[in-house]
Length: 454
Image (tube, rainbow, N blue to C red):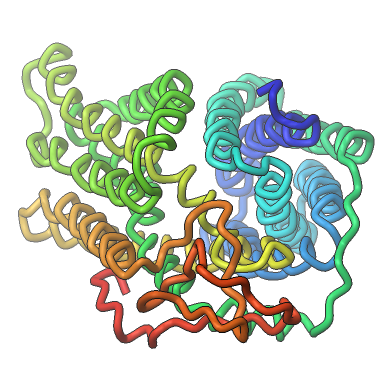
């Protein structure tokens, strides 16, 4: 960690604080709204839904703001807004104030999430993959600390949790303002809509984003299917916590080693596909214990939990393999001045993918339970993962995945990409000096990539 610039070090610690503050509050928000404030289930759903919609739907705004205003200012503004939003959760009791808090906290995430990743991507240079691997470690640690701290603060009351979370974000805001260096932002030569059109016309990037639907869908099952599977296998609601313990321990001990070793062995597409395959295979072991509650006491319940934990471990290892390289490749699809926009649009796609994927898995859970086929949702997840594997392998064969550090192809210089979607990482002739704002994707139409994931 000390070999990274100070700004990157701060943003790694920042992510620890962000996840700590987020998870010490959000998991307990629904209970507070329903039990403490007596709100109806519909009102609780509206408050939570507004927060999620504000964040997922506005990622593209945060990404564009980072490109045009500078990532530093957007990160600071995002943290400050979340401090205010979480403070309102502590002080507000009526629906209007709570909705305002939800909008502010969601907008905050939409601002600083793409901006942080864009800043790290630029500042870490050739070590993007290692930086994002460390980022995952700090994020996972915060996700572990947050619920533990939140459950302790709930012994006082919910407002103590909300004010503590707001204080964490306030401290992070001050630290960012003091430590993060300002960088000169190139003057934009076109409007925001022009930037969006440029990114959305990048067929290789859109194909890659669609291929990642499986990764985000399967990752979300850490909070839906796997906890439900652990509960069903053991008959004990607390068994779900074992899934997160296994994942946290694996992430803290293996993430950096896995990324460092794989980075030097083969291209990124190979490891992304391998990680997705491991994630898909992680849903096979729990199928062995689906259906029926244990009847042999604690020992039988522990034995039935083992396949679920084995599946969770495979899922976490697959994420450790694939995710840092996915984050490394996203800004390589276009020019550096649009890094934030690329991250923003990627996270909009991922949010939609997670919603669609969770809906499909939820439907499979209901259908499996009603039809006596408890294996159905697990098989559904295996299918999602394999479709993404096929998509990434197809893009890799078409040379559609960029090489980290390679300059983007500029049209008009007499060098054409070698194949469908290819960027030509090392062109044999020098591109002509053209306006980089005019760069367009000279790929084949998207119909040439017949990915199952799309």
